[in-house]
Length: 304
Image 1 (spheres, rainbow, N blue to C red):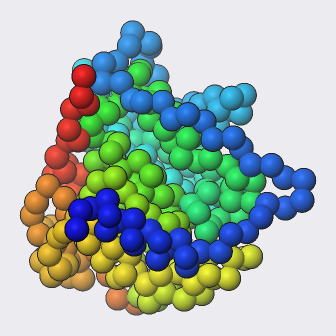
Image 2: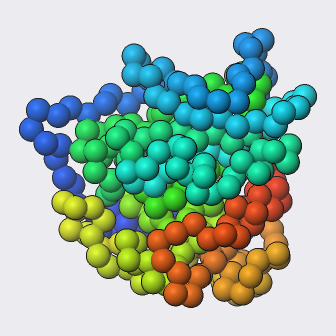
């Protein structure tokens, strides 16, 4: 069976598990913006300095932090790092330690901000979901802007996130698989029906004692979404299945015990299970992400 057909079948199962919830009275969803296609040729637009910036979403100035190496002469692989629910870019910047990857000269790192600290990851979370915020379009525009400014290599865009931000990374990979070279999710949940156009490399980190996103599934996706989280291993099996990959039984190079993956290849799926770990960013996660992203092949060149 082809990937698209198999993905569609799985999407039906996942979508059926999610419940539609209307917006509160008086609220209106943000109209989806047409996603800009990243250009492989940077324009002459001035390259932004590290610090705080905004993206104009049709009059809504959405903030993000940008960290870039002190010296760079070419577009870099980009990591888009999304904060957890009710947090902000500065929090995940401190929490993750991903700035070390920018300081190494290997990556640019962008930390965007969700609406009132939340991302619309599908079945979660709160404000962004209630108001129908199109966070996929926001990420489209953020990435396209950084490509146009010569900061980011469009063939090497990676996403990561914690908790609700991790769920947003999953959603973006589901809907924009052809623009993502890989994702890494920390304590996050797949909370949306998913039918990616291509296989995606996924690295996940999850504690077995996570009280917010239970490792074995269950609980509720949101305060008013009485739909249980999928088990973490079921989510990894989904991504493995999409890629027609072997079981997650191979050790992950440079990772501690508890990390297992599908083995070497263009597409890799791996899970680091932290025994008795909670809802937290593991101390080894960011360094392992850097190695994982470094080893991912670039996306194919766009057709002319």
